[in-house]
Image 1 (spheres, rainbow over the protein chains, first blue to last red):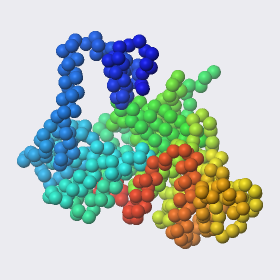
Image 2 (image 1 turned 45 degrees about the vertical axis):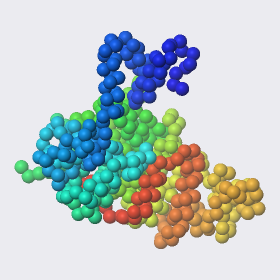
Image 3 (image 1 turned 90 degrees about the horizontal axis):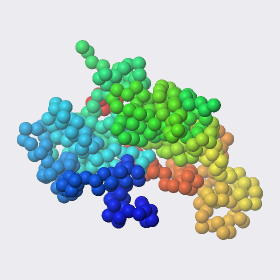
Image 4 (image 1 turned 120 degrees about the vertical axis):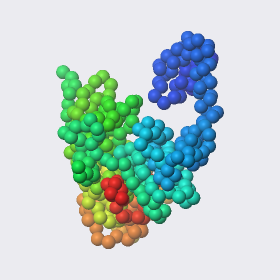
Length: 204
Length: 266
């Protein structure tokens, strides 16, 4: 029970506060504020919000191929004939697909892992969509897998683990370049970033 | 007068994403106390401190202590343990060590030997060139962790009657604090772990500070790990989450270096 049953508020309001309180990053005070904001909202706006929440739950599914969120299966990217089907870009979250698509330079396929291996948080390979990736490699003609994972300890652990799994398939495995960000400052770069930037230097 | 700005050397244990581009950093300070601090904007690409705050890094931090959580204003990398980060097997073991440090350290209460032990163990793990040596380093860390945090098991005499033990087979009972002789076993026999004299001998050598061993049988190393994993898990009073992945890596038994840097050159 999230709310004190002695609080003098109608049951539907308490139910709404409890529902908001279950969302990530929303504490009891924020939940109360959001609930009372919705109460003050025009009926039509509240209905639109409720429809949007229900709509997402009823229509959004995982693409059976890339595991990205989609309305149709396979998703638009997987079913597109104009994209390169021999290259897969491996990302952590659906939001990473959006970031890469926004940049607009990549024309291959994606595979969304829905997380990273994080031993300290008890997240192992079985909690991610790794088996689906291996299934794709088995049955599709893939020549390259690009590991576009975050440069964190978890990202590196996942990349190294997946690279180990991919080696028997004979596909080229590449990793995104690591180094200094655009607008960054050499003076403030850490040792690992500097060393990777230095190793990945290019002739001008 | 309250000192709001201060500097400390620390080992970063955990970095949890918070809000839009912020991170809550958990670290072990050089005083051996656990520190939780907020690093605002550290996940943004142009952050000046983000790269220095990755777990498994020894850093110098400049902190501002506000009413709630401290804020990290500056960070300077002192030791990055690159070899541990570039090898999956070593990284897994280092993560296990860090989870134990996080579990056994306290906020506010300092324990300087814990900081020294953590750095020595990570450096030793980094220089390990053999899987058995890696496992021994982790076991040695576990026993010394119990020692510096006040949970050292009794390894020389029976915990009940204080008789000096010198047998071939020993009974190890975690919750009563170590080895128990056959005469005092009544009432504890269900919880007793039968350990070999080789295993007890290695534990005693760890206690005396010996860390270099010649060839050790695989069975002894496994026995040692089992006893120490159960002991640390019992005193921590929660599941050690990284064990599962570490065991999985051990089963794979592949030791070739697989580094993120190597992958860039593929």
